[in-house]
Length: 414
Image 1: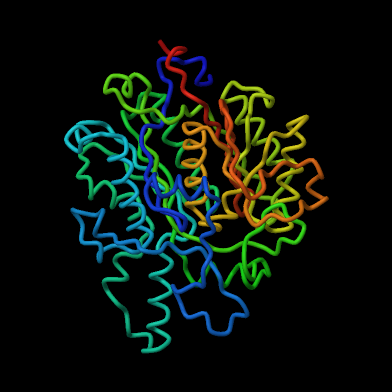
Image 2: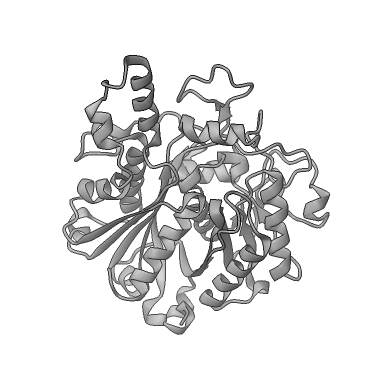
């Protein structure tokens, strides 16, 4: 049964917490999206000596102590700092007091690709340099991926909460949001803080570099001269609650969560499958109760690799007779792994609320294999009234997650 068939369990987004290379917090992130900011810079997270190129999309000027009040930030790895800070931002943005929040049944669901691999990189480096007996106990304690969600519960002092960390790689953010959508719609929780977080780490950068998929300068999704991804970092946490709850407290509503679809084909360790993604899109549309023609734009996974872009556009064309605009914010913020689709979901919610389509920057000429008619909203944002938006997420091993968001119309809900 889809959300349209259950008006009493309509799920809405009322708060956004975002940390990205183009902006921190809703105002900064929104300004970055509207202006087509480029978050690329030389990587500083680790020694890049020996790599022919090492650009990335790191988050600059992030001070965890500005946002984390209960936990000593030094007890947390960078990814957990991101998730906790973004959760604080989201609750503040939702206009909800901590006293009220602590009385609610809550779900905290955070997706990730790397967990705290940045700390693991450091631990391995210490052992190589200082010998196998060298082990930093603080780093070892904070390296558990489960801390990305449990630390939010601890920071906010939630007393009736389930903390879940979802490791479905680059689709994990959408998985986590879908988890929250189901829990609220089923009446299992009153509020859900869901999204994703990851930090730039040597392991992931090196893995993609060895695969030949790291771009030397910028990320150019759908462009005929694209050369690959840029690794990024950050966090996106969404506050979701029932429409009745949001209306009762007079909350601002960014968008409705209409539905989502999941597929896991496991056909190849890294290569996406067109048919499986097309099936996932169809499942999302059915779950949301919409037709393809209702989608106003698609926030694509859009990594900027040859394999992803052509396969993803091919899957879209299987479902859509005439595809709507297809954009990729990874052109701006890089590939933030488990945070990627969560940040894209936040971007979609802002796009619906503010009435614009974010651009695909660094675009010169569309790859003919993607189709000459592909509208990727090149280089400049476009004003538009949006009613339904689709957010694609693909991951290694064939984990696909497609989320559908829609405009909340108060007159229709009254």
